[in-house]
Image (cartoon, rainbow, N blue to C red; front, top):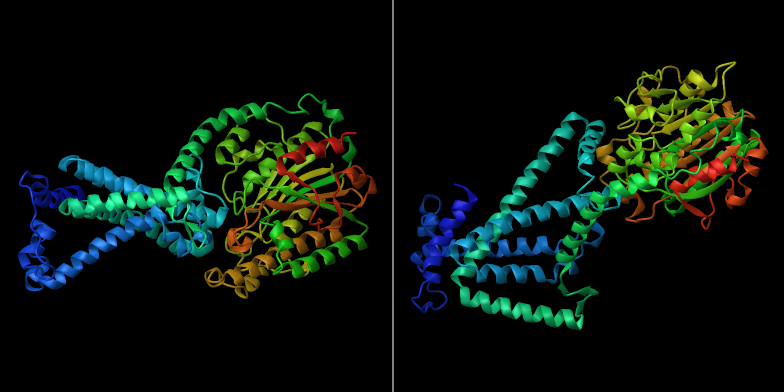
Length: 594
C-alpha cells in the first residue's frame, strides 16, 4: 500500500465527519475510551491491529497511538530545529519555536480535505529532502568547513566513495554507501508518515488545533519582536526560511559564476610578455613547486601540535643551514579547506580563485597560462610532474604545461599503500632524484611535486628510513604493519590530531632531508600546504591559511623577494602577511622577471 493511499484512507475515515455540517462533537470524559474509540482514532485500516491486539488491549493501543503522535511531532520539530553544523548542536538549539511549523499547520488546517491530503504528502517529501540537505551540510562542514554546494558538489560524492574504498577497503565502501541509501529512504518515509499523521490528528481535533496554532503564532510574534532568548538562544526562529533563501541565492550565484570566471580568466598581465623576458631571474635554476597535503596553519598554531611541529621546523632549518641554504616563509589563504587539493593547486598555479569544480573545468578546458606553463613557454626548462596521488588518467596534466608526468604507477614503487596514500613521500622524492634531478648533462628542471603522505586518514603513517635502504619500496611492508589502523584512530579527535601531526612531520622531514642530500647552488624550492585539514583537526575553525616557504642557496634568489615581508626560516611569523593563494603567481613572476 502506498504512503499516499494509506494517508488517504486514514483521512477519509475521519475527515468526512470533521468537515460535515453535523455541528458539534461530543467528547467523553477522560479515561472512558472504548475499543470503538480506539478504532475510530486509528482509522479503519488499523481496527484490529496486528492479530487483533488493539481490540484485546485498548489501553495499550491508545498509549501506542498517542506515543506515535508525539514521536511524529518531535521528528518534525527536530528536523526544523536541526543545526547544519555539529559544533552548533546544543540542547538549547532544540528549545525554540520554528515559524515554519506554525505556518505549515495553519496551511493544512485551512485546506479542504482532498487538497489537505495532497499537501500533507508533498510537505512530508519536502521535509525529508530538507533533512537530507541538512545532513549533507553537516557532513561538508565536518570535512570541508563549508556547506554543500547544490550546483557544484555532486561530483564530490563520487570522490568520497573512492576515498572510503582506499581508506577502509571495498567492504567498508559498500557498507557506507548502503547505509547512506537506507538512511535516505528511511528519512523520506518517516518524514511523510510524520506529517500525514499530524495532519490527521489536527483534522480530528480541529478546534483544538486551530486554537493551539493561534496561540503559538501569538507567542512566536511576541518573542520575535521582543527578542526573547533562552541561554543565549533566540526562542522565536525563522532560521529555515533564511537557510532556504540563502541556498536559493547560492544556487543562483553558482549558475552565473561560469560567466564571471571566464571573464576573469581573460585578464593576464603576462600574456603578451615575450618568452625571453619571462622568469629571467631564475635562469639555470631547478625550481621545485612542492605541495604538502593538508599542511595548514593549525599545525603551527595549535598548542597541542605546535611544540612538536616547531621542533621539526627548527631541525629542518638547521639541516638546511648546514647545507648552505636559507629560507623565507609567509602565509597564503587557500580557496578550500579539508579537501579539494586540485582546486588549491590550480589556484596557486593559475592566479585565479578556483573555488569549485565548475571553475576547475573551465580553467583546464581554456587557454589561461599557469605558472608551470610559463616555465615551459620559455623553452629553458624541462617541466615534470611528480604526482603519486594520481592513479587514473589525468588529462588535465597537459593543461598545466608539464612535459612529463610521473604518477603512482611510474615511480618504481613496489611497496604497500598507506590507506589513501599510494607512495610514501620519501620514496617519491627519491624517485624524482633518480628519474630526473640526478641525471647528468640535463636541462634545468621545473617540477611540480605533490607530497601525499599527510593526506587523511593519516593512518598508518610511514616514517623516515635511511635513503640507501629505500630500494623498490618493499621495505615499507613492515613499516605499514607496525602502523595504526584508521578505524581505531578516528574513534577519538585527539588521536586524529596526533596522527595528523606525525604525518606532517614526516612530510617536512622528507623534504628537508632531500634538499640537504641532493640540493645544490641551483636548487630553488618553493613548498606550501594546499589547504587546512578537516575540522576534526582544526576544532571547527574556518581559517584557511597555509604556510609557504622559499628555500635557496643562492642569496640573489631570496634578495628578489626581500620586500615581501616574509619571515626568515621555515616557520612564518604569526602576524606575517597573508595573501590569497591566487595572488602568488603574478607576484612570483614579477619578482623574477627583472
